[in-house]
Length: 384
Ligand SMILES: Nc1ncnc2c1ncn2[C@@H]1O[C@H](COP(=O)(O)OP(=O)(O)OP(=O)(O)O)[C@@H](O)[C@H]1O
Image (cartoon, rainbow, N blue to C red; front, side, top):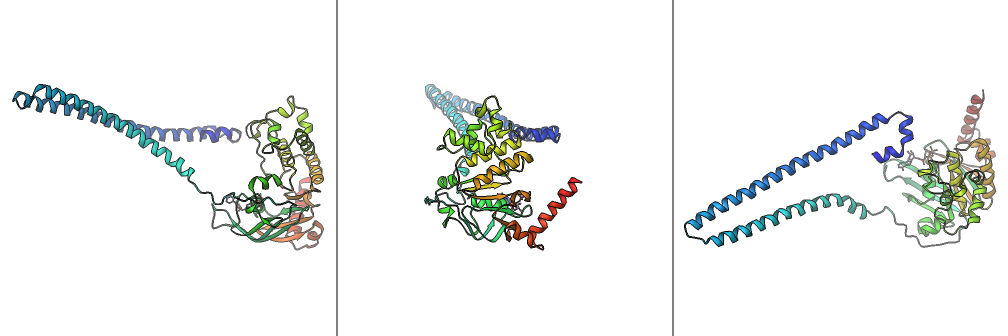
């Protein structure tokens, strides 16, 4: 709990929840204290019992042994020998109980570790194929349900063909399943039904490392690591040169702001990128995706944290690099996807419309038309 709260300190402070979190922490500490108190009591009982039995046995042995010696049934040397053996045995049993309690503690703690170690993943990343990638992605009658919510189907019988070199935008109401489509393309999950293929090869059969060199994702919430800007851009891309990194940075509009920093590309981004602004994080994440020169580029709300000027610069850069590759864009601001080759409207896990912006705007009773009209209306009301 302490780790979670410390790493989200800004949220805690901005909602003035310090005292509440402190209380929660105290609550957890006092339950730990209760367990420790019980343990101390049990240990005290055990030690008293042990010492009492030890002394009781000694008294009994001395009493009965003394009686045997005095009545001539036993030699006094034999009694002393017996006493010495008995004391040694007692000590060893005492030590054995210590070892046993340590052992029991270790068994309790290791149960979780072994459960994790023997956990079988839902699917193996054991694909071996390394096909030549052009960037055709095909969803064939795909249905999908998250394993944690088996009764909540997210995609139903979805067929979507994304041709190589096309820029395809996924739009639709929030919660419709757009990011889930991206998760399936990224092979974070496997569909419950149907197949997802890249250039005709089911993605589960493609080598994991090879596949992710060809497909790059800029996620909704870009995650940066504690390390330099260079380290973050080149993450998992050992084959890229310094020039590749500079090119990608220029394309993603990172170069200008990094050049103004004292340490340039060696500037630290901080844990989870906390020392960068939201827009800078997104641009670094875009550079990280571009540096590997992917055949398929996925942008999940990738420019949502940018101001209008940076957004248009990044959009220009993205449309420049979109010419040579397949691009899949999810954007809520529909103005950013007007130029896409194809727009797929996803509602409640189903594909309800596909076509270009012009085609879909002609279908005045369609979902896309109403989404665009609503956004235009909101923008107008905002302006007024
Ligand atoms: N990891 C998860 N586990 C269980 N259910 C999830 C998970 N991620 C998303 N969902 C559910 O799947 C449905 C589709 O979510 P998804 O994120 O794909 O929608 P979306 O169209 O991308 O939404 P948005 O536009 O708001 O990002 C939602 O009902 C959501 O609650």
